[in-house]
Length: 130
Image 1 (cartoon, rainbow, N blue to C red):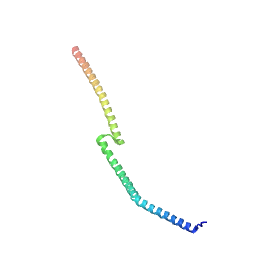
Image 2 (image 1 turned 180 degrees about the vertical axis):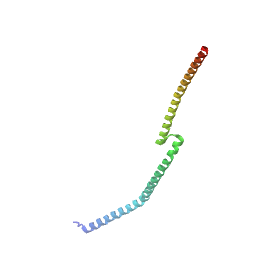
Image 3 (image 1 turned 90 degrees about the vertical axis):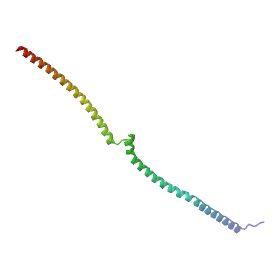
Image 4 (image 1 turned 120 degrees about the vertical axis):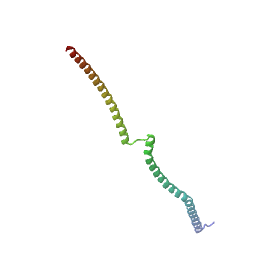
């Protein structure tokens, strides 16, 4: 019969366990060393992207009025839109009232001419009666 020494097995088991723990620790350290620069760059890139977004938004706010002034393409401000609309309405009303006034003046001229003819006729008839 072979006698198995339990203390020897326990020592080997603990020795193997310690080796695995040491291996895992070294692997974690290596992985951390490899990944740390990437994580650091990722955080730096995230900050740069946030700054660039802020700059782009600022530039867009500055360019909107310029684009509208140059191309009349973007949404105009309500004040300008209302002003142009009101100017168009007033111009249309002015033209309409000018046309009405011209017609009234023509009617007045016709009336004055007609009155002048009647006056001249009455004057001539009065002269003939004398």
